[in-house]
Image (tube, rainbow, N blue to C red):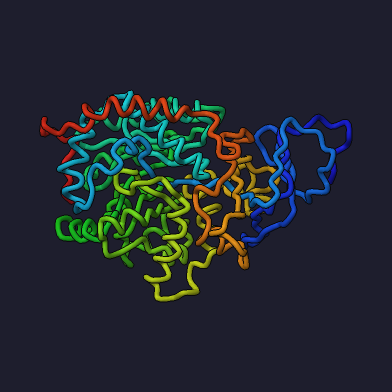
Length: 464
């Protein structure tokens, strides 16, 4: 429907692009030669390009030759850890933590965290990521960066039982202080680190706080099969069973990694009273030579959404969710021995609606694409978080199957424009909200003090 001529101008009109769509059964499709009308941070209309000719708007984007996708969501990362990118290479998990990462993290200052978060957000915006779920320390600084740069985020202040009750209380205080900040772009979670660093008493207390305050929980669990086997040998239960008996599975919980989820865990996850989701970050699993990956197919069969993630750049070396999407598809094909599993359209579903649900931002159950008011699809009533992807490069031509081209040929560098809540954060590859050279300069000056390990301290012991 074309608005009346007297209607006030739209904030933004994007025209001439193909738009990724979800039908009422959530199947992926593409509407060619389309236009997107944005008003008040929300998609007002998705229509044909011809229908917006002469439409008044505060800003126009001619997107001919481009594809509009919902903004990508990094469902689990540690954004400030970009400052440690490449510092601990070619090491087993235990040495990576104990010998390098946790000693260095004991040096972190609030300014280090802020600079790392700025660099991470710049990388993600340039790669078409509009929202991320972060789990780290000094999160007041990360929240300030999110507010300033225009991204959307689910943020949690990490804690260990070794910190005593103060760590858990600090996580709660952060979540309550920042919930709904940045004009609603910041949501928050309680963030116990993992069942092997947070004891049952603290996990149970976290579950009670989550219910009392209406907060989700974001934590690592069953990260790899070694953790599951160690938990069984020492305690007689898997990490997922620990989450069940402490009440964490009765909250809305986002579980990072889950490559150690075993068949006996699946009924617990299926019967969980809360909204349970898993985030998969396959590049890191390959680097650590873990023999298993997230059981995406089994989780999908029981209705548990699996969102795409990168983990922190200290282990993954990048925050490239495009790569996570392609790797997830390829590794799942190999793991299942089935080239027909996790098709390009299924991978795009994980990257869009499933990732939105994983971070609790899928919206209410109604409307096109299954929900309104949230993110993860481009449809009337949805938040205007979207990216424009240029497919004119030689590595993406010719296009026989648009979904396959996006998943297996396109790269993060093909993102031309990134928009969150209707605000353009990057246009034609120009980053508009972060001064990257200045961030890199100051971070470089601070690195010698940050990476010093001569003190021998570590924030925690890794031993599952």
